Amino acid sequence: MAGPLKKMIIEAHRQPDYSDSAVETFTVMFNPTAYTQKYELEYQDEQGAGSTGSPQVFGKIKPQDYTFELVFDGTGAVVEEKDVHKEVEFFLKVTGKHDGEIHRPLYLMISWSTLSVKCVLKSAEITYNLFKSNGDPLRAKVKATFSENIEETLRVAKEGKSSPDLTHVRMVHDKATLPLMAFRIYGDSSYYLQLAGANGLKHFRNLATGTELSFPPIKNT
Image 1 (cartoon, rainbow, N blue to C red):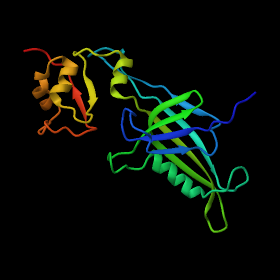
Image 2 (cartoon, rainbow, N blue to C red):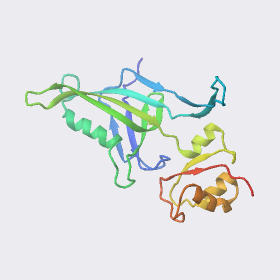
Image 3 (cartoon, rainbow, N blue to C red):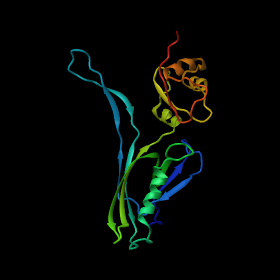
Image 4 (spheres, helix red, strand yellow):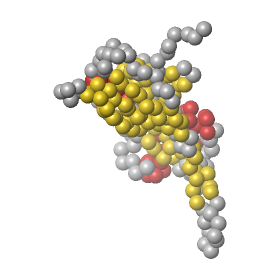
């Protein structure tokens, strides 16, 4: 016997590690009939002088993309009549509008059956295809693409990369300091001046939360 229908929901968070409670929640009007999941690897060509071959050197695994087509219906024929334009605007507010508190769009969590994805909105293409006599939309389709958003600690753990001879990229979290971040990567906080130079930081004592810093290989001199 089939259980009750569970609709896909999108929760919006301000914390990049999703440790806070959702500040907004969007529930789809109709579950998608299908979705696409894009898994992409990045390689770089390395071709020596005079050679014809071009071996593909592995670069990184890109964040996965998920694309859904969501239907908004305001005719009242299937579900309670709603204002389609307002419903679409609310979807965009939850998923893609600039949040004044964190100065960027919110971090999203998509949940539907066995699917659970931490992500951010990458793009949304809206098509209105049925209208009232006064021009107000009665039906819309939104083709939305979300890009996977893995919290930095989890991403590094998944990749299994912790060696100081690799270039790392880290996002600055609240109250983080450059010496502390240097210690976590290299095991030596004294490298913070070299890191400041590598990233062109003039005021490294006050790191802005959300800034991405590059931690290149550093050799002892």
